[in-house]
Image (cartoon, rainbow, N blue to C red):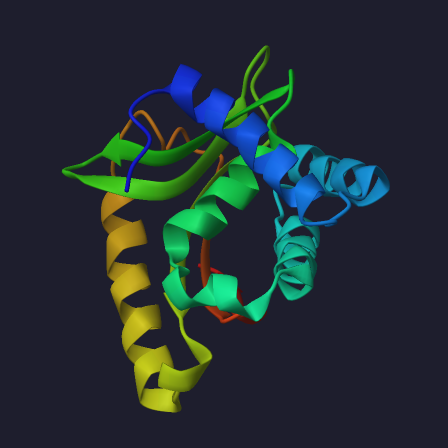
Length: 173
């Protein structure tokens, strides 16, 4: 399932926020602002990534039966989209699609951010699977970062692996 364009993604993001609200998942504006400050000033994603994990923990476990990395991409998009930064999911680059690409909307950010996500169901998790997902993500992110539209000398690259609702790996590469 992919969302066809930015307008639809924005609409779907707003719908997703309403869905979270309907599920009694409250968004923490203070944490979101803290996340944005970390992104804008330091080029880091630890606050937003850990917050996404907290949001996932609030969801009914039946929702995880069909969970995949696209759902987590959408959480990044939904929670941090604003007037200062662009958040793209499935950004086309170098023959593939970067999971999350964050860059300045009005003016350049100190750092552009590229995130390659992997999702492992808790029932399928083991060290071998984690290693395979990490290696796959590393290959993808290195390929994507060769695209001149993304890598303008200020790129921060992250591999993030979720095990169910938990952040199992958050690695800057």
